[in-house]
Length: 143
Image (cartoon, rainbow, N blue to C red; front, side, top):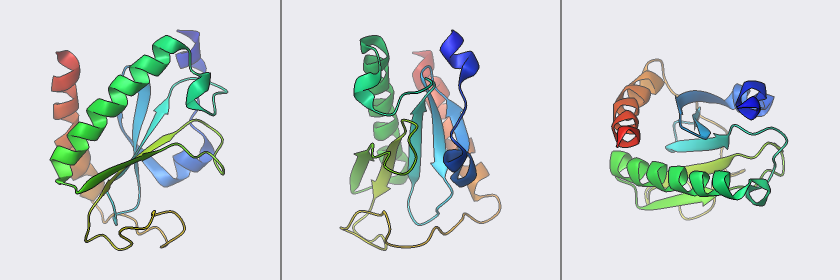
């Protein structure tokens, strides 16, 4: 599909995240902030800044992928609450945050934005997360 061939991840997302997996529609990213399991889904569509701009097939696919990722992350991290948000006030490319929250996390119950500086993962931690999630995503998508 031509949209996928032209897709470029916004520089803010390239700087702050690592790619965990490529889903049928979205790139699944992990924000490099070890204070929260903070994932970001980015549909591989150019010049889209809001969900309502996706065509109906892409929107349905996004909802399916978002629900799957949310459920998997809650199981993987045993969270208390899943926060899903699409803001885009700073980074205009459509990206949807999926943040596993815990009643014991550093800013509970406040939103995480602007509360604390990013605390990057230690060496090897991102690889462990990716190694744990990748086979589970592959198994789900194979069904």
